[in-house]
Image (cartoon, rainbow, N blue to C red; front, side, top):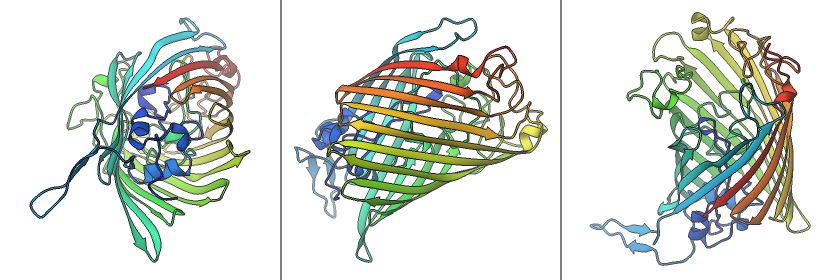
Length: 456
């Protein structure tokens, strides 16, 4: 596969300020490459081999066209610009309801829009490109920074094999990944922004999204061995600069102290091996992050978190155009809650979480797809760290949750997605029945979600 094969987009899955995850092919990539989205997706956001290569090479591949150019010389800096700005727009509208209404609220929540996103996504110059998103949230009634990945990429021969290398500047650990098995771009690709979610999840699973700034390096050897190393620092959007660890304007609705203020840097790592066949692709890898944090302040005792685990993805082409995708991921989080214990927010210092998910998806060409996934979280019980409260709390202090989700998606056009998804819970915040001590059961949070998404 050569780097002249292009993509129409990269996946979009965000944990932005509690919004539903977004995932969609971008028209700006299609305009840049001259290819339909199906050239590089099964259905968005799942990338095929060409799509992964487009992202790997920094989003810069383009069709032959009237670029604005100036040849470099000893006294003249070169220039190569797209003839039009790489802009795109996404609008989402949704309807969602839980099995039992949330206390004191109206069920079946209709949002028009749920959100609107603006994208600067495409080539900036030779070897330099971006995926940059700003999203308007109807609940917050303002625009805010969403997932962003700016890349420099190049390649050379090493020992007779192709070596791709690059730099990534991004704001969410795992969005630099090329596969759909890690949290940043993983299943489920859509979700309600009004339904309750289990409290406990690993740091690497979206907790730092859009609240950090990271710079890293990556490489791919011979289209087989992939590796990334990125370091992150806190970047509290809407908060005072330099940060004092307190709440900024974007956090006033919850009245909380920022839970994670990175002390020093938080290193993230990723390794993967891929094997491309004529009709299939296999990826096996692992990833992790380590972070020291002071909750709500920038000095004093620290909490420590170490996340790590394996992932796998297998794609098989059937009947020439149909694709079966199997994906799985597991994360172990070991934490030392020294600061939380000292502040009376935890009963003990040593904690751990185990989080796993597995899913299967069948793509009928690029018109229809159906997916089913299972997820679970277990870990250390602590009635202070997982405190009791109606709806969102835990009566027994356990982080254990488990459930499933099923999705059907229809693409009448490649830039229009109509989807229905059902999420069911067998356990929520520690129990199946009366999990919050206020009489609510896990199955009361079962959620039906309908989404219409338009890109132009």
